[in-house]
Image (cartoon, rainbow, N blue to C red; front, side, top):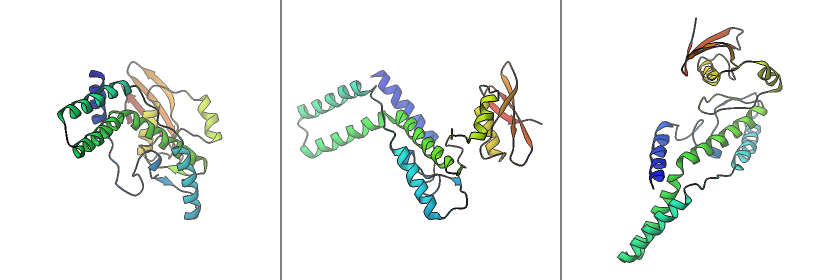
Length: 214
């Protein structure tokens, strides 16, 4: 039961962290997410077809989580047993069952969030392969074109490489920035990131906090 309560607390924290618009680009989650992309010059019909294919790929990722099922069986059985012994009316029983179903879904909120994140990454990886550039920093794209993939295998990376790349993205250095570790020491790392305008962005990270350095 303690584990179940801890999961519930974590779910509340997770829910409070994510803020997205109710509609339009950037809204939704998982396979229902609406991408924010820098699209190549294509007809809207072509874009809609590409998005539909990528959305279908994301929707094909199943949700797998069962670690709390035993605890939920105990909670559900106990609640229904108490209600039956108290002789609650049929309508109240229906409401109770509906509440239990909602509670069961809520308990898995952290796992569902991870699942949605995977679906969004799969969707945007698919879009990237079709030439669309992700412009939403809340969604991680892991696919790289072959030219960048070769450079990826040669570059040095560190613990804060991803954070440095996210900072570069907020600085509009590049849509898909690639950071290289150039120096590190106790509690800090220094990265360089080539920008699309030909300049090189220098970033210093200290214990996970990155800033542009002069």
